Amino acid sequence: NDEGFGVIDPHGDLIEDVKGWLYFYSSKSLEDNIILIEPTNPKAIVSFNPLEKIEGISPEEQAGELLEVFKKIWSDAWGARMEDILRNSLIALAENNLTLVELPLLLSDSLVRKRILKKVKNPTCRQRFKEYESLRPATRREWVESTLNKVNAFLSDQRIRQIFTSQKSSFNLREIIDNKKILLIKLERGRLKGSADLLGSLLLSKIQMAAFSRTDLPQSKRVPFYLYIDEFQNFATQSFIETLSEARKYRLLL
Image (cartoon, rainbow, N blue to C red; front, side):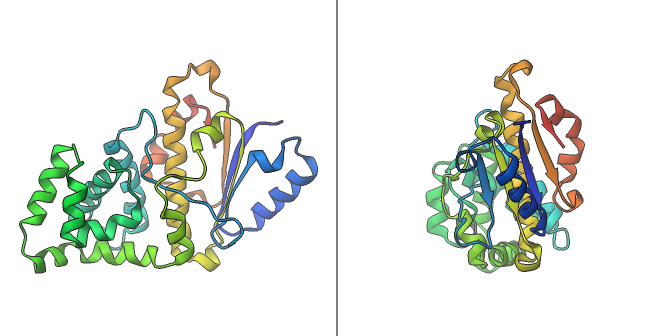
């Protein structure tokens, strides 16, 4: 019915079926209206910055939503210290319009950290990093070891890393939703392993934030966007589940 929709597929077969259906039956211009995210396909390279600013969403709110993603995926190593380090790191990176690729440098390189913190306005974030800087180097390394292990393991896969290197995403989720476009996310967990769930969760979180940014539109102007998620429980954070009814007000329909 020419409505916009998205599909998150952790295996790949569903996306291939949807692509075939669209080719034969869709009245949309496929080249202009379909955004394909397929990390295992070198011909379908995209850039995605989860920290990129969304109008109407503060860096703190954005960091909080992304933190829920890491908390879900890295539950085996999660603790108060990792949460504090990641929260303030995400705020600092978001305020500087940087990417997740800079996260290891922020935590391990004093010169990089100093340059980034010059532009940070959040007082709590600045204070936490001031305290972090005052620690002995060995203590600093101990504090961030588990966080860096998780982040570096995720970014060590070049197929994943290349997606996150650009400050500006190659697609605009709000524009996709508002203009009834089609978003196909093919993750192939068999090849990407645990990175598939993390990437899918980050994308789902940003889709939610993009939908919630529609506060600048009256309800009558919010066109529906349908989101189909195979194995929903592997991607949705507790925060996302708790706000499902709220999402419907912004016409994000699952």
